[in-house]
Length: 421
Image (cartoon, rainbow, N blue to C red):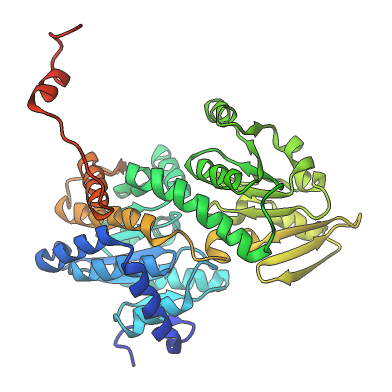
């Protein structure tokens, strides 16, 4: 029996989970380099770290690296449907890492699991969506004084944390891992672009070519998704509220229109905004019979599902992760993955190659907190630029790419103003 506390689906799944963890490891060279250094230097020795992240094979490798650095770590899921049960089992059985995650857990269990990792009285937390930090600030305020800081993985979480800072509600320093270039430029764009379509295809087995795909949000996630959908032959329509991003989508060759207009023509809808009711029930009513609705933002509130559920004459699951809602007029709408992150619900999330950089950021964020205990103000910080560039250098080396260097003359030119034409 394991020597740690846990709540996972079935420890018998551990053998397959370990194989998945090992497979992901082969695509995470940057994190492996950090793990080797952590094993020697033990920068996290004596610290307790609680993580609320998607429990995947890539996340498992991050937890193993943090433990190698000397931290006492525990992990819970950051989304009720994103857990890979075999990976959770392996973390407990093979690596003695307390893990609390079951795919499909209800809301009560989800919060029980978050409280379980907070019961370890962490000095550092890692979040994906800011639920753990929110719980600390709302219900476990007494523990805030024990926190050095927290690192945040995703856009949605950063939005929440900056709102907390603005309102004066934030009580601990936060590192916005999501805002580092080696995270959002690659994870959000290339990871989300590929994994979202992977989840949609696995759930539906539809042909994307010729379909009208409506993408709400043209941030880095929307960029990647539009790029990949277009590459597979889809006709992409973008919905945006930011005029600069909307103009960029136009220049990138996509149609841009209001959601009420796009609702009438779309075959497949995907939200990637981090906002609430991006697709309202009113606009669902405008959709044509057979339209498919999905979300790749962090929370399912991007879709007004409560109103759809109340208005539906009937509902049934027609495929794994595909639920059919029949309205009173006979129109059928299909919601994918319960409106949750479709790339993690129906597929395996981002490929390990991009998570390698994202989780290298998380590992270095933990080390940053350890080195700067008591020195940080209560605010949302961006990852230091030198850390960001070091991750990029390591990744370039891992993929065999050459990086040029400036000559002394070029450095002097860039740092002076005397020399002109």
